[in-house]
Length: 101
Image (tube, rainbow, N blue to C red; front, side, top):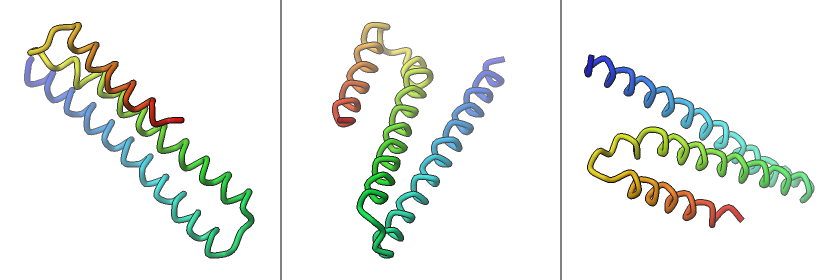
């Protein structure tokens, strides 16, 4: 039963890794599109709109990783108390959210 639980946990992690990588590949395409827009001398407003979209997409990837970490990685750490895990999770979230401005 423990092996089955571990297998399910690994499947979830593999699926989550696939989702994150897909998001990053889409973001990579957006960045290539931005390079093309600049090379083609597109207007500034269109370029800035795409920059904002790419920035938002990258922020979403970060938040997605934090959420996944809180659901799985921190919960799996049996060496820390519940309070330590919560403090660690909040620390990571606050550190990341401070750069979102």
